[in-house]
Image (cartoon, rainbow over the protein chains, first blue to last red):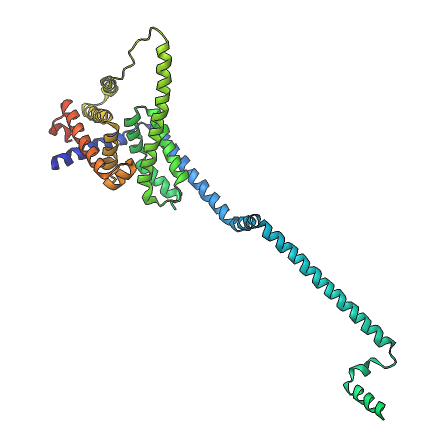
Length: 128
Length: 193
Protein backbone atom coordinates (compact mmCIF):
# COMPACT_ATOMS: atom_id res chain seq x y z
CA UNK A 1 0.00 0.00 0.00
CA UNK A 2 2.83 2.36 0.97
CA UNK A 3 4.64 1.31 -2.18
CA UNK A 4 1.57 2.20 -4.23
CA UNK A 5 1.21 5.55 -2.47
CA UNK A 6 4.86 6.31 -3.15
CA UNK A 7 4.39 5.49 -6.82
CA UNK A 8 1.37 7.80 -6.99
CA UNK A 9 3.28 10.59 -5.25
CA UNK A 10 6.18 10.25 -7.64
CA UNK A 11 3.97 10.26 -10.70
CA UNK A 12 2.10 13.32 -9.44
CA UNK A 13 5.44 15.01 -8.73
CA UNK A 14 6.52 14.47 -12.33
CA UNK A 15 3.16 15.67 -13.62
CA UNK A 16 3.39 18.84 -11.52
CA UNK A 17 6.81 19.47 -12.98
CA UNK A 18 5.50 19.04 -16.51
CA UNK A 19 2.63 21.45 -15.79
CA UNK A 20 5.09 24.00 -14.44
CA UNK A 21 7.19 23.75 -17.61
CA UNK A 22 4.49 24.77 -20.07
CA UNK A 23 5.49 26.83 -23.11
CA UNK A 24 5.12 30.59 -22.81
CA UNK A 25 2.54 30.81 -25.60
CA UNK A 26 0.34 28.22 -23.88
CA UNK A 27 0.61 30.07 -20.55
CA UNK A 28 -0.32 33.31 -22.35
CA UNK A 29 -3.30 31.71 -24.02
CA UNK A 30 -4.49 30.25 -20.71
CA UNK A 31 -4.13 33.66 -19.06
CA UNK A 32 -6.19 35.27 -21.84
CA UNK A 33 -8.89 32.62 -21.44
CA UNK A 34 -8.90 33.25 -17.70
CA UNK A 35 -9.26 37.03 -18.17
CA UNK A 36 -12.09 36.44 -20.62
CA UNK A 37 -13.92 34.24 -18.11
CA UNK A 38 -13.40 36.82 -15.34
CA UNK A 39 -14.74 39.62 -17.55
CA UNK A 40 -17.81 37.49 -18.33
CA UNK A 41 -18.37 37.11 -14.59
CA UNK A 42 -17.95 40.88 -14.06
CA UNK A 43 -20.50 41.56 -16.82
CA UNK A 44 -22.93 39.16 -15.21
CA UNK A 45 -22.50 40.87 -11.84
CA UNK A 46 -23.21 44.34 -13.31
CA UNK A 47 -26.20 42.99 -15.26
CA UNK A 48 -27.58 41.50 -12.05
CA UNK A 49 -27.20 44.87 -10.26
CA UNK A 50 -29.21 46.62 -12.99
CA UNK A 51 -31.80 43.86 -12.83
CA UNK A 52 -32.21 44.38 -9.09
CA UNK A 53 -32.66 48.13 -9.57
CA UNK A 54 -35.38 47.77 -12.17
CA UNK A 55 -36.86 44.75 -10.45
CA UNK A 56 -39.65 46.60 -8.60
CA UNK A 57 -40.82 48.40 -11.73
CA UNK A 58 -40.80 45.20 -13.72
CA UNK A 59 -42.71 43.44 -10.96
CA UNK A 60 -45.42 46.13 -11.13
CA UNK A 61 -45.60 45.87 -14.93
CA UNK A 62 -45.80 42.11 -14.75
CA UNK A 63 -48.55 42.33 -12.15
CA UNK A 64 -50.61 44.65 -14.36
CA UNK A 65 -50.05 42.45 -17.39
CA UNK A 66 -51.05 39.29 -15.54
CA UNK A 67 -54.14 40.82 -13.91
CA UNK A 68 -55.42 42.77 -16.90
CA UNK A 69 -59.14 41.85 -16.40
CA UNK A 70 -59.03 42.73 -12.73
CA UNK A 71 -57.28 46.02 -13.48
CA UNK A 72 -59.95 47.01 -16.07
CA UNK A 73 -62.73 46.25 -13.59
CA UNK A 74 -60.99 48.34 -10.93
CA UNK A 75 -60.63 51.20 -13.41
CA UNK A 76 -64.35 51.14 -14.32
CA UNK A 77 -65.33 51.00 -10.62
CA UNK A 78 -63.08 53.98 -9.88
CA UNK A 79 -64.68 55.96 -12.74
CA UNK A 80 -68.20 55.19 -11.45
CA UNK A 81 -67.21 56.22 -7.92
CA UNK A 82 -65.74 59.53 -9.12
CA UNK A 83 -68.90 60.22 -11.18
CA UNK A 84 -71.04 59.57 -8.13
CA UNK A 85 -69.00 61.96 -5.99
CA UNK A 86 -69.23 64.70 -8.65
CA UNK A 87 -73.02 64.25 -8.97
CA UNK A 88 -73.46 64.52 -5.20
CA UNK A 89 -71.28 67.61 -5.15
CA UNK A 90 -73.33 69.28 -7.89
CA UNK A 91 -76.65 68.36 -6.21
CA UNK A 92 -75.49 69.88 -2.92
CA UNK A 93 -74.48 73.04 -4.76
CA UNK A 94 -77.98 73.23 -6.28
CA UNK A 95 -79.73 72.97 -2.92
CA UNK A 96 -77.46 75.65 -1.44
CA UNK A 97 -78.37 77.99 -4.30
CA UNK A 98 -82.09 77.36 -3.66
CA UNK A 99 -81.66 78.18 0.06
CA UNK A 100 -79.86 81.40 -0.76
CA UNK A 101 -82.61 82.56 -3.13
CA UNK A 102 -85.27 81.76 -0.50
CA UNK A 103 -83.48 83.85 2.11
CA UNK A 104 -83.08 86.77 -0.27
CA UNK A 105 -86.75 86.67 -1.28
CA UNK A 106 -87.99 86.46 2.32
CA UNK A 107 -89.34 89.53 4.23
CA UNK A 108 -87.40 88.59 7.35
CA UNK A 109 -83.68 89.18 7.68
CA UNK A 110 -81.45 85.99 7.45
CA UNK A 111 -80.45 86.39 11.14
CA UNK A 112 -84.08 85.70 12.07
CA UNK A 113 -83.76 82.12 10.75
CA UNK A 114 -80.60 81.57 12.75
CA UNK A 115 -82.24 82.64 16.05
CA UNK A 116 -83.92 79.56 17.49
CA UNK A 117 -85.90 81.72 20.03
CA UNK A 118 -87.58 83.52 17.12
CA UNK A 119 -89.62 80.45 16.16
CA UNK A 120 -90.87 80.13 19.74
CA UNK A 121 -91.71 83.87 19.92
CA UNK A 122 -93.51 83.71 16.56
CA UNK A 123 -95.63 80.79 17.67
CA UNK A 124 -96.46 82.40 20.97
CA UNK A 125 -97.37 85.76 19.42
CA UNK A 126 -99.54 84.11 16.78
CA UNK A 127 -101.53 82.35 19.58
CA UNK A 128 -102.25 85.70 21.23
CA UNK B 1 -21.68 34.14 -5.05
CA UNK B 2 -18.02 34.13 -6.13
CA UNK B 3 -16.25 37.41 -6.87
CA UNK B 4 -14.19 38.08 -9.98
CA UNK B 5 -11.04 37.91 -7.84
CA UNK B 6 -12.00 34.51 -6.44
CA UNK B 7 -12.73 33.13 -9.90
CA UNK B 8 -9.46 34.51 -11.24
CA UNK B 9 -7.37 32.95 -8.49
CA UNK B 10 -9.22 29.64 -8.79
CA UNK B 11 -8.64 29.48 -12.55
CA UNK B 12 -5.00 30.51 -12.17
CA UNK B 13 -4.61 27.63 -9.74
CA UNK B 14 -6.11 24.93 -11.98
CA UNK B 15 -5.56 26.09 -15.56
CA UNK B 16 -2.20 24.41 -16.17
CA UNK B 17 -3.29 21.06 -14.79
CA UNK B 18 -6.56 21.33 -16.70
CA UNK B 19 -4.63 21.96 -19.91
CA UNK B 20 -2.29 19.00 -19.36
CA UNK B 21 -5.19 16.77 -18.40
CA UNK B 22 -7.00 17.74 -21.61
CA UNK B 23 -3.88 17.20 -23.71
CA UNK B 24 -3.58 13.65 -22.33
CA UNK B 25 -7.16 13.00 -23.39
CA UNK B 26 -7.34 14.70 -26.80
CA UNK B 27 -3.64 14.65 -27.81
CA UNK B 28 -3.90 18.02 -29.50
CA UNK B 29 -2.57 21.22 -27.94
CA UNK B 30 -4.83 23.58 -29.90
CA UNK B 31 -7.96 21.54 -29.19
CA UNK B 32 -6.95 21.28 -25.53
CA UNK B 33 -6.58 25.05 -25.26
CA UNK B 34 -10.00 25.55 -26.85
CA UNK B 35 -11.59 23.02 -24.51
CA UNK B 36 -10.07 24.59 -21.39
CA UNK B 37 -11.15 28.05 -22.56
CA UNK B 38 -14.71 26.80 -23.18
CA UNK B 39 -14.81 25.20 -19.75
CA UNK B 40 -13.63 28.43 -18.10
CA UNK B 41 -16.28 30.48 -19.90
CA UNK B 42 -19.03 28.00 -19.08
CA UNK B 43 -18.06 28.10 -15.41
CA UNK B 44 -18.22 31.91 -15.39
CA UNK B 45 -21.45 32.07 -17.40
CA UNK B 46 -23.51 29.35 -15.77
CA UNK B 47 -22.22 28.90 -12.25
CA UNK B 48 -21.34 32.43 -11.14
CA UNK B 49 -23.96 32.20 -8.39
CA UNK B 50 -22.31 29.15 -6.80
CA UNK B 51 -19.87 29.45 -3.90
CA UNK B 52 -16.20 29.20 -4.78
CA UNK B 53 -15.84 26.01 -2.72
CA UNK B 54 -17.91 24.16 -5.32
CA UNK B 55 -15.74 25.35 -8.20
CA UNK B 56 -13.18 22.49 -8.31
CA UNK B 57 -15.82 19.82 -8.82
CA UNK B 58 -17.97 21.95 -11.11
CA UNK B 59 -15.01 22.91 -13.26
CA UNK B 60 -13.92 19.28 -13.58
CA UNK B 61 -17.41 18.22 -14.57
CA UNK B 62 -17.62 20.99 -17.17
CA UNK B 63 -14.17 20.09 -18.48
CA UNK B 64 -15.11 16.40 -18.81
CA UNK B 65 -18.36 17.28 -20.60
CA UNK B 66 -16.57 19.68 -22.96
CA UNK B 67 -14.08 16.92 -23.77
CA UNK B 68 -16.96 14.54 -24.47
CA UNK B 69 -18.49 17.12 -26.81
CA UNK B 70 -15.12 17.35 -28.57
CA UNK B 71 -15.02 13.57 -28.97
CA UNK B 72 -18.53 13.52 -30.39
CA UNK B 73 -17.64 16.19 -32.95
CA UNK B 74 -14.39 14.38 -33.71
CA UNK B 75 -16.24 11.09 -34.22
CA UNK B 76 -18.60 12.66 -36.75
CA UNK B 77 -15.70 14.37 -38.53
CA UNK B 78 -13.74 11.10 -38.63
CA UNK B 79 -16.74 9.28 -40.02
CA UNK B 80 -16.97 11.72 -42.91
CA UNK B 81 -13.20 11.63 -43.44
CA UNK B 82 -13.25 7.81 -43.55
CA UNK B 83 -16.16 7.81 -45.96
CA UNK B 84 -14.51 10.34 -48.25
CA UNK B 85 -11.07 8.71 -48.12
CA UNK B 86 -12.56 5.28 -48.83
CA UNK B 87 -13.99 6.75 -52.02
CA UNK B 88 -10.54 8.02 -53.08
CA UNK B 89 -7.94 5.64 -54.54
CA UNK B 90 -4.21 5.14 -53.93
CA UNK B 91 -4.12 6.40 -50.36
CA UNK B 92 -0.96 5.58 -48.43
CA UNK B 93 -1.55 4.34 -44.90
CA UNK B 94 1.22 6.05 -43.02
CA UNK B 95 -1.06 8.13 -40.78
CA UNK B 96 -0.79 5.73 -37.84
CA UNK B 97 0.05 7.45 -34.59
CA UNK B 98 3.23 6.16 -33.05
CA UNK B 99 3.92 7.56 -29.60
CA UNK B 100 7.56 6.45 -29.80
CA UNK B 101 8.06 8.85 -32.71
CA UNK B 102 6.75 11.68 -30.57
CA UNK B 103 9.10 10.66 -27.80
CA UNK B 104 12.03 10.55 -30.18
CA UNK B 105 11.13 13.99 -31.53
CA UNK B 106 10.89 15.50 -28.08
CA UNK B 107 14.19 13.91 -27.20
CA UNK B 108 15.79 15.64 -30.16
CA UNK B 109 14.30 18.98 -29.10
CA UNK B 110 16.02 18.67 -25.74
CA UNK B 111 19.36 17.61 -27.20
CA UNK B 112 20.97 20.95 -26.40
CA UNK B 113 19.88 20.81 -22.75
CA UNK B 114 22.23 19.57 -20.02
CA UNK B 115 22.14 15.83 -19.32
CA UNK B 116 20.06 16.14 -16.14
CA UNK B 117 17.45 18.29 -17.84
CA UNK B 118 17.27 15.80 -20.67
CA UNK B 119 16.71 12.89 -18.33
CA UNK B 120 13.95 14.73 -16.48
CA UNK B 121 12.24 15.64 -19.74
CA UNK B 122 12.46 12.04 -20.89
CA UNK B 123 10.96 10.80 -17.65
CA UNK B 124 8.10 13.29 -17.88
CA UNK B 125 7.50 12.35 -21.51
CA UNK B 126 7.36 8.65 -20.65
CA UNK B 127 4.98 9.22 -17.75
CA UNK B 128 2.77 11.45 -19.87
CA UNK B 129 2.78 8.89 -22.64
CA UNK B 130 1.85 6.18 -20.14
CA UNK B 131 -1.03 8.34 -18.96
CA UNK B 132 -2.21 8.85 -22.53
CA UNK B 133 -2.19 5.09 -23.07
CA UNK B 134 -4.52 4.48 -20.13
CA UNK B 135 -8.21 3.87 -20.85
CA UNK B 136 -10.07 7.19 -20.68
CA UNK B 137 -12.03 6.41 -17.51
CA UNK B 138 -8.96 5.18 -15.64
CA UNK B 139 -6.99 8.26 -16.64
CA UNK B 140 -9.87 10.51 -15.64
CA UNK B 141 -10.21 8.82 -12.24
CA UNK B 142 -6.46 8.90 -11.60
CA UNK B 143 -6.12 12.58 -12.48
CA UNK B 144 -9.18 13.74 -10.58
CA UNK B 145 -8.42 11.67 -7.50
CA UNK B 146 -4.66 12.14 -7.22
CA UNK B 147 -3.71 15.21 -9.24
CA UNK B 148 -6.77 17.36 -8.61
CA UNK B 149 -6.97 15.88 -5.11
CA UNK B 150 -10.75 15.44 -5.16
CA UNK B 151 -12.06 12.91 -2.66
CA UNK B 152 -13.75 9.69 -3.81
CA UNK B 153 -17.25 11.20 -3.52
CA UNK B 154 -16.35 14.29 -5.53
CA UNK B 155 -14.54 12.21 -8.14
CA UNK B 156 -17.56 9.92 -8.47
CA UNK B 157 -19.89 12.93 -8.82
CA UNK B 158 -17.60 14.51 -11.37
CA UNK B 159 -17.33 11.30 -13.41
CA UNK B 160 -20.98 10.38 -13.03
CA UNK B 161 -20.30 6.92 -11.58
CA UNK B 162 -20.29 5.12 -8.23
CA UNK B 163 -17.58 5.48 -5.59
CA UNK B 164 -16.74 1.81 -6.03
CA UNK B 165 -16.09 2.39 -9.73
CA UNK B 166 -13.78 5.28 -8.89
CA UNK B 167 -11.75 3.09 -6.55
CA UNK B 168 -11.55 0.33 -9.17
CA UNK B 169 -10.53 2.76 -11.93
CA UNK B 170 -7.89 4.34 -9.70
CA UNK B 171 -6.43 1.02 -8.61
CA UNK B 172 -6.26 -0.27 -12.20
CA UNK B 173 -4.74 3.01 -13.37
CA UNK B 174 -1.96 2.86 -10.79
CA UNK B 175 -1.17 -0.76 -11.67
CA UNK B 176 -1.24 -0.03 -15.39
CA UNK B 177 1.04 2.99 -14.98
CA UNK B 178 3.49 1.02 -12.87
CA UNK B 179 3.55 -1.74 -15.51
CA UNK B 180 4.04 0.67 -18.41
CA UNK B 181 6.86 2.40 -16.60
CA UNK B 182 8.55 -0.86 -15.72
CA UNK B 183 8.34 -1.77 -19.39
CA UNK B 184 10.21 1.46 -20.15
CA UNK B 185 12.95 0.38 -17.81
CA UNK B 186 11.91 2.36 -14.73
CA UNK B 187 13.01 0.78 -11.52
CA UNK B 188 11.86 2.13 -8.17
CA UNK B 189 15.22 3.91 -7.84
CA UNK B 190 14.78 5.53 -11.26
CA UNK B 191 11.25 6.61 -10.51
CA UNK B 192 12.21 8.24 -7.25
CA UNK B 193 13.94 11.53 -8.06
